[in-house]
Length: 405
Image (cartoon, one colour):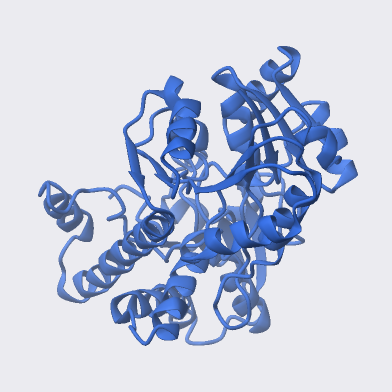
């Protein structure tokens, strides 16, 4: 099939590359000319294991293209994906500015009957809005069906998750449109959940809210374990063997970050308030998540009797999780801000993130001649470090339960 993808961010680029890999001809659209120029050369703007190789392979095979021109992208396309950002607004609701603009661009430029697939994470009812915008602004005499198809990719594992996902969710009001989108994904051989649009939108939000709540839960259990002398890793393993619970996302630490969980939990909590149906469990998970990084900071401050002025603090890991360069809502940024505000000097090392002023070139630079080392992201590269206190003569704060005791 001929496919167009609006947006070359994390979701759009991965979607376009994978669809080209399974045999479709894909044109990805972005308004940033410099970005598109780099993409045409096979240079990905994001760090994602395996993505660069698949990009280069499918560009060379003539299945993957990039452009800034909507008309060029849509001329042969019968399926158009919307994969633009939905950042959080000041109120906590999702900002739909980019979604609405994408809908207008589609309406003004398509020349064929088109299935519009909304891949972006959007509040319940947004697909209805997209359909209305398109139909009100159509120039050509064509039919349009809007389908909700939320993504469930983990940053750092997106390629693997696309080929080995748990399910593909398709929300449509048209049976024919739903069947066509299912055929698009057929080469992946994954289970398909077909439902209406609003249910598909809710599946995405509810899934992320549940996983975020699971993380906040084990973090609170971890805090209690620390007070009572229990081993939270043993507790998590014991809980995880129960099939009703499962071990995934029971990893204690300093809280979740990234582009999805913080934004999506806030958005669904906002929707609950808007419809006078408060999601008190989700709201508590949000508060617990932020409190977790505050508690970690307090441990550092307590060790120095509340005074870190003039202290040198080494930090291992900046990205919110391993195998990504994403700093959105990363606990590291909060810690750096609060420590430097109190007069500390922070030296940070991350295998991928290199652009912050606190960054140093090597691990050794970050962990030698410092008063404390903060382990913030559990990169595999840190596995081989000898975390013996006597060797580095500094206090180690393991924010990810990464060090084996």
